[in-house]
Length: 239
Image 1 (cartoon, rainbow, N blue to C red):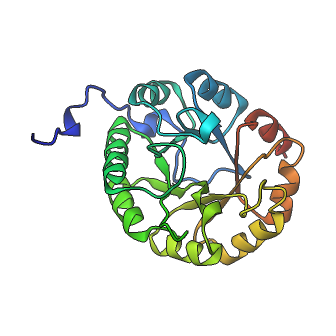
Image 2: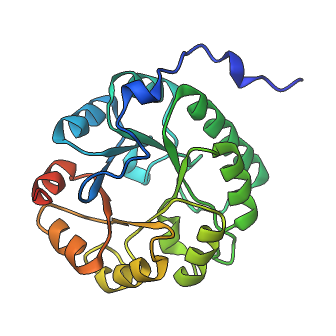
């Protein structure tokens, strides 16, 4: 059976330049990225004033790839920049060739719909970044933004992983510094920010709230935070 083409997908993507905040112009202050798994949650995040949304499937299991219908509807109505999580299933981040093919197809569909970027991640059984799989996924996602998601907190050596992701020209890393929460990982996050040295954005994630967001930003130097408590985070980081 011949492969089906994505070029006939029955949705016309809106003009990103007219619809959303610029993804090229740096946001003032710290970027707040909301993790959402529904249309109404995405609208609430927009109302809260976040600069970026990571759109996911159900987050109770860590999130999976959202449906094309959810992506399309959110892109119709949202102004913040939208990243889409690409994760074909819950569980480990070690993927088969068949799962890799699913991920590439999902990226192609979301790209055609008009998203701004992707949160992806793939590991080897040994706990390293799977450079071969990541290169294939990035090739499909290019030229859109790519963030390596919290699979980074499962790697064997975060310093080595950071350098590999820089070499792959990944734009950002979502991490708690390998700790159970971003607050517990403050020292490690600060180290990662210093090692990144503006070559890749370190995005703090992991139980960030209005109570700890300002301290995490101040003590680590991160320029972006990610979480579900986006309304409180936005309020806490107001100048």
